[in-house]
Amino acid sequence: IVVKNYANIELFQIDDENEKDCLGWITILEKCDGNIRTELKNENLDLEERKKIAKGLEDGFDYLFEVGITHNDKKLENFLLLGGIAKILDLLGNRLEEKVTGKWDIVEEEANLDTAMLFVSF
Image (cartoon, rainbow, N blue to C red; front, side, top):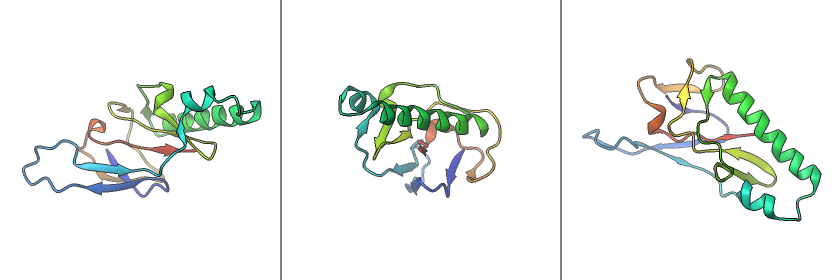
């Protein structure tokens, strides 16, 4: 499923007349401060900032679960920070448990999540 119209996602389609390129979509994200592993090593983050990061990730995974998406590559490098806000990315190869409804519009029902990178921000 390739989605659009989520507040923090920009999708651009690449023309692929021969349909040989399975990565026909490019996702453009805002520049983040760094991944969570690097930021957690920074001793300047106090306990409250660390709790906010953890809560942001929890909210993000709760939302993904609600819409039926499982994230199969949970590692600190796949979570970015922008101004202290946790960003979940690299949803390649993840499973869509059921049809997505709500904030996202479905663009291609036949598309596989392996062909798109989705980005969720909380």
